[in-house]
Length: 287
Image (cartoon, rainbow, N blue to C red):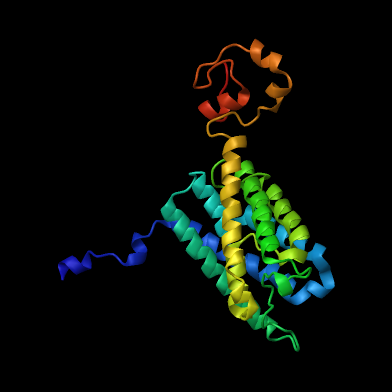
């Protein structure tokens, strides 16, 4: 009995920081689906493609500022995969994020579904803001075209996320670039496939739409993940690990680079301000 008294409840053994991050991913994905997909379900006839694109972009922008410092505000399994391939998060954390994102999308879709059912005459079966191709595409895009579109659109989104963030957290003006990127991919993608670029965003609505939405769901899981993997590969070429963040000036004026005093491998005196800042932290520099 004494031994049982020393056993703590399972929730007391949870890492509070990780719990906050996972909760942020769950809540963020829930809100993204409810508000952004909600614009597709409830207001598409009133706001059009531009309004839908802005709804997704603005919602992600707001969430990036609210949750970016907590979890990085991935709210998207493709983004999480990109960061995993860049070795910014562990596989264990990525799996936890994926579970939270999918569950958040399902709960957000459930709340939206309950709301939609209160609107007389609103069709949800086979539609409900889900993604699609062929006869379910506004321009009847075929399977190959839809696959290519989702790969390329996701590539842009994930590449921007990887490029503007330092590790995981979204801080400063990072969220602005990410929100704009999501709005842009929706401007071109909504007529093509409804724009997924986010497997969780596709899974949630498809479960409630049923029919063709479920039979075509596979494409909107696989294609965004491939796009994210390609973005991670491209990012390693343009932004190599441990390299200076700003190199354009040196390329434009190579004679400046040749005239610069030699630097040691760790970016000592004479290196770029970016190199010194990375090595010594904020506020360091030559005496």
